[in-house]
Length: 589
Ligand code: C2E
Ligand code: CA
Ligand code: CA
Image (tube, rainbow, N blue to C red; front, side, top):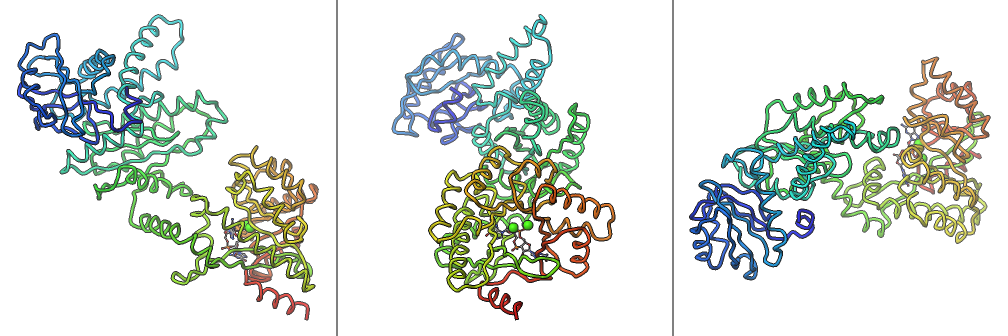
């Protein structure tokens, strides 16, 4: 029933405690679209409340049922089962025709009730987090103790029982927490019922979780998730706290506002991680959204908390951050960009600039990199760093990249026709382009259509793509190579590089990232490293291009280290095509 419930939001199930007059004292299971409230009379749900009155007046020690019509939805017919429990009556209301569920519903309700004493305060009864905690612990026991152990058998049985209860209540089987859909609907009700309480939404995300999976196996990774869920429960459990594991390694928690929440999370989760028995440094990034707009859907609140967590991706000085206005502005900007991008592409607002690539010794231009600029009639010049990441995440990058590649093909064709000094243009291929099955075919057809050879177009692919999904990356690159394209590994040394990668990949050119160059100045050891990398590249017959060369001193140093090719402001900034052609003719004079 639980699963079905999440899929079908119209499923009607209520479990409530009420008095003999129908006044609701406690809601155990609600129907999100038409929730019932504590303190209100359940009679309001029905078109014929007298039927309920007569049911409530009966001796209900063994339970009894009636069939009633609900006025909320096309006079829907429901079965109302009532069982007395002390002075209170447990009402279970569900769509008629599903009688097989009655005993399960009662079982679930009673076991839920036994976990925590009825307080009348607890919105969901059953002390959700108590069950979640119990379940988490049991899941852990189940994983660690030997199977033959007799005590374990009992525990397993208990776990199973607790688990089936939880599953019915829409839970994630791995951690025992609520699943995302259940979390959303319950959080909505909590926020609605506690208008005067301030709440926070916390997002917790395990960094490089995929690496844990790859390096230690899924069992260990699963255990980490279950253990982290226990740690979070231990840190944030409370009467109105609600937990979910959404997606693989992301947790969301709704918790009443606490002054020192940030420090608490930092300390407790830090402690948990530092003692965690895994030979890998773990990091959990946490973001908090102080809920200041209750009209937002819960999913958007989660986005905000996650955005705060993501904002410290590269900042290792802290593990927690609070969602603030700048992130909000960024989000709005991203939205704006998304709204106008397609129209802008149609209008030709994206302009391809070219930056020369030169031979260090002679300063002779032997290539160019195509770098896109967005010149929007209203917003002015927008740089790639502001829109490329947005396009990469919303999928538009593939359209833009194809547009840029086509423009470059057109330029090359026209240069050929006008007998202008011809050399290859390097275009950027976003790592997300590699996931498009038709990439190789599209590029091959494009150069053919413009009467070019594949080697006229160099493809710059950033090395980080390789780290993310190496097999996929490798197979696409091999295919592109087979077709005759020249592959340049972009941003080498920007953080992901490994020498192993270099020897494995079928690449032709290695572009040293500009940060790599900066770190090398006045640092003998780094210079030695760069020198070594250049020699290695030589041995592998790779051409090396240093990016971001701005000064003569840098050029000098490169020469000394054996790097023969460069690109940077010293030689020329990225410029529009005509300016680039003028620049070339100026050089020849
Ligand atoms: P990238 O591929 O590493 O491109 C080099 C970046 O360094 C360019 O920034 C370029 O203008 C800048 N640059 C060149 N020489 C110097 C220098 O001497 N000093 C400094 N400080 N910077 C220099 P840009 O054009 O802002 O592009 C940024 C990034 O955006 C590019 O990094 C590339 O990853 C991406 N990008 C640009 N155009 C495209 C495109 O058409 N498609 C895709 N997928 N990505 C693009
Ligand atoms: Ca590039
Ligand atoms: Ca680069």
